[in-house]
Length: 548
Image (cartoon, rainbow, N blue to C red; front, side, top):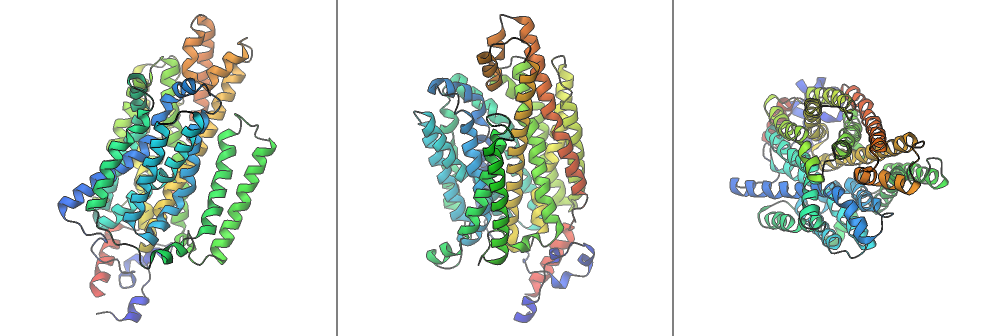
């Protein structure tokens, strides 16, 4: 039996950057024990896993399902100017709360935190589905974002607590595949609801799925709760840190979402918000380092360079993969005249390999206990895939479209879940929740930035290309804000239709090209990520657990 002093002197091997001490540090590993923190019977494990997968399905599909219903919603409410806020309101609130969910789950426990997140999400969905005007819909989306912002990271945190290190990859890989599949299939489902039923089902569908997930988690998830009374736990919340981080995030996302579209990049409000974001970030860092009693993001999380690099890599994954995923359906709708459902089907060459590879990479990591080379291959294939997709034009054949999307799907699948496994392997055990939230936050911010800049580049390219086409300004505004209306508006003028279609293809190509340097930079940064071989880490933790 180890003494208290011996236990206190243990040091996690991941507090250093160099993997060299791994060979001789088995006696100084912070004790994790050989058993997961959450102990469940096999039947309860399967049920809880299904519930967690449904929670991820909710979060992932809700981010994209409404994309194909936007035009119908704007027409019903006769308010096209507020359409961008349907997505922006969800993005702002979800991005603002994502970093804090990991810490909240440490304070209040995994189970209460994920239950609250699902309930908030369902409340927002109910308000959105029942909205009778655009303002109420936007408010509902903002509320849903507060809940949805934590679901993905919380699910990964709970799975990390449910599974031993050696087999964690395969389970998180399955969850990652659900996220990837839902992210791409969402527009197809949204189109089906909008065309066949009503756009309100894009939000109402969350209730049967969410209630099932909620019941399973409430009944079958037996997780340790946080220590202390409710008042003591509330006092532990880093309120100032949360407000500063939220201000940083929202002040950054607002000009990114509107710059080059509603506002000029050099407009006073754009510059003011960027400056505000920078100032709030500096204040956040100073406060967390010097004044916070229990920081929202402890500086110890960044005790080695790998954690910092993995957050940046997650940002680059979001800005590269999700930019392409967001705009490829638009290519099929503009060039092929595809409906929302048909565009979703055309995405299958990306969806199928993406889903399969996410699962396969998780299983592979569980067996070989290595993950860094998967990041390398994933970024390389993503750069190649984005480059190939940027070559698509109005004359591309089916083989090119399928082949190019396949390459991107394989690359994206290798990255989606591997980054989370790498982060959980790089931080100390007590920081797994915070580390997982950070990589999720990085991906959300990267997606927001990539999609916003891609949209700005696309619109500017279309407007500049059609400037001399003698298109009435109101028609030009319509086809830039609602590209799927292009064929309907210009069908009486075939030559002008072809010119407008070519302008859109050029704009999409420019947006896709932006993803290439992001993927290349991700590859270069991932080369510097230190890999903690999982077999040695698991063995070391198991031996230390036997001593304590």
